[in-house]
Length: 144
Image 1 (cartoon, rainbow, N blue to C red):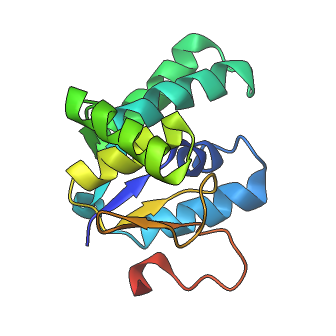
Image 2 (image 1 turned 120 degrees about the horizontal axis):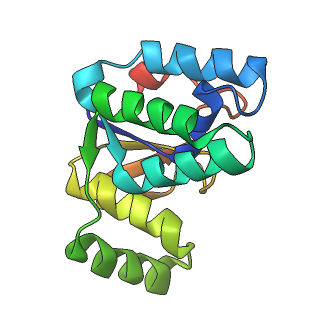
């Protein structure tokens, strides 16, 4: 099963929101087969922004962290067809545009799960289900 990672999963794994969240995110990532995970290119850009603004990391340090993620997982581009589908998601389901881009990217990559805290847990579009892996009573991602 292919899984897409939203920015917040990466930010937690980088320790941006405390050690408890970092440990939880790293456990989630350890449970996933690396070749089954994709990272939308948008998430890498957002992560750089979070690391330099919120975490106040030096841009060179943030860049190295982002490059590490892009080296570790397949990165999916934001294509024109992803943008068009994202607009359809916004129109039909009233999700935010950038969340919709993440969801459309996951669909284009044939993912079954999009791990995210930012969208409605359980929402499904084109075979991709949003899962908040930090929510209460969540089974392991690999169990889905």
